[in-house]
Image (cartoon, rainbow, N blue to C red):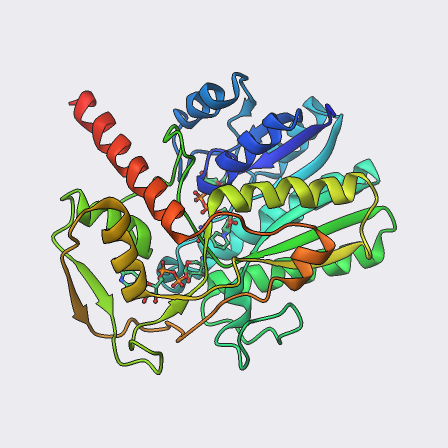
Length: 346
Ligand code: NAD
Ligand code: WQD
């Protein structure tokens, strides 16, 4: 298999792991990234793991002309995995137009170019955020999409609608939206991982940065939720499992195995873990004591979310294979590697 696949945002957290998974399966990967939330050094990590350099295009998908040129330069692209987006929920509340511009116009420009080509095999990064606080757990794909709590969440809902409408209107257009639950972890080699800029907003990078001494202590946002230990519950999915799911979803489209030309799948482990369970597991697998304190609830947090993975298990024949232990172990190994790199830079 040597199809050429465009991976937008391929130097980012999930995109880089997916680029590795694609290259390991023999695909030719073209990465487009404007480095707004990543470093060009990630290319070296991908090449080190796979012994192959992906093609890299430093372009901004908000520029219609850039997108056009990209497809002119690579007329043989057979599939697109679209990760590129801005993803900080809080920032999206403060600057909604930035989010609507980046997350929506980039998607539309890509689809316009694909329309010119006449066909598309398109994988879209969606999020469990579209469910809000679901009425039933685990959350299946049939659960209603709730009014988005943030402009970021809204861009994912709108993105899915744009795809549904486009696939309906254009016969040869096929797309899959993957609704990720909480992606965490890193490649087991620690050659690539998550690189949060500034203070991490997400739990796992905050934990690893606290354990390594970069942050004083972790604030646990609320212990008075209606859950067994009072802290919120999430479905933490290893980025390696997530990356593999993208390859499977893409192959489903390339091989014509789809049941409809627009499909949606949840990607999670199916298991929920509370914040306290994550802390305890982190301490167990790393042997590190984690300083933490209970703080106020964070505005906008939901109580609990975890995936019903039946549809992905049955239709994609994909199942998460790695657990929380392995994910936290790999995140810690990656944090130590980041520290080593920072020290050798100074
Ligand atoms: P990330 O920020 O690490 O990666 C996104 C990449 O896209 C970055 O390298 C960034 O430089 C690039 N990019 C952004 N705007 C661009 C533009 N206009 N042109 C070219 N490149 C651009 O994020 P991630 O965690 O890897 O997330 C990937 C996708 O998955 C995003 O769409 C995100 O919304 C979605 N998602 C992420 C999570 C999560 O918790 N990480 C959960 C659900 C969904
Ligand atoms: C997880 C749990 C926090 C930090 C976000 C986005 C969502 C999706 C995934 C993109 C929660 C608690 C966190 C801290 C804490 N992204 N926490 N102290 O909020 O489930 O989802 O990322 O689509 O859209 O909203 O992930 O990692 O921020 O939080 O106690 O310092 O950890 O309250 O219960 P979240 P998270």
